[in-house]
Image 1: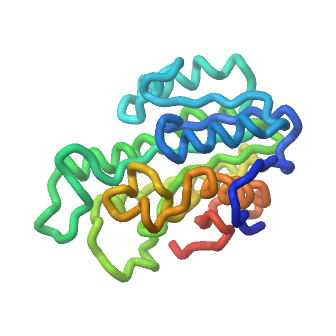
Image 2 (image 1 turned 90 degrees about the vertical axis):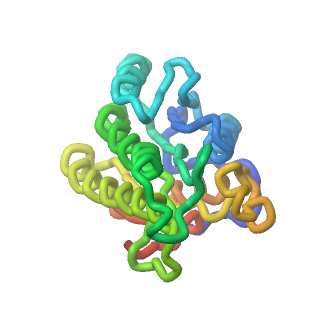
Length: 243
């Protein structure tokens, strides 16, 4: 696997065929929007579709009918060579990541798992058939804090657990797709700390990288992946992360 770039700049996905088609879920978020912009700037990319709750077609990860309908609406236009899910939930109105067991409550757990694990599982079900059979990258943004082996600080219960669940879903899907779609690369991708609304309450603006730089690094790493890497948990710079 290749390492990520060190500065923002045009990225061309040379491993994908000329005229490749890309799909970005969560395209209104900071990282999702940066993916859309970077892919639109790649002259080898023929089309970039960005999906979110207000796109056309609309896609709501909390509504399976919405996910299924969006996949059905896009299927006639042709297969995708790159699918990136950049949607995720760390905090929301009325809740922040839990610091202790006493902070756990059902509503936050349900909301976090719906956004970070259940919704992505539905994407796997309904969108994997839309991937190109010769070369495709199916990428879900995960998080290093979802690593059980790397968990040394504790806390952030629902976010950590939902990302760990996402990682298992992807590892399992990679095994199945290796049989039916052997040229599809399925990866859980850690973006690092990026200056977006998700990281803002946690000094993301101070310690994070700009979204365009983070996206350039991630795309450079993705471009170097092969089917042998399918099922991996990787960081933006190509480093393998422990489960």
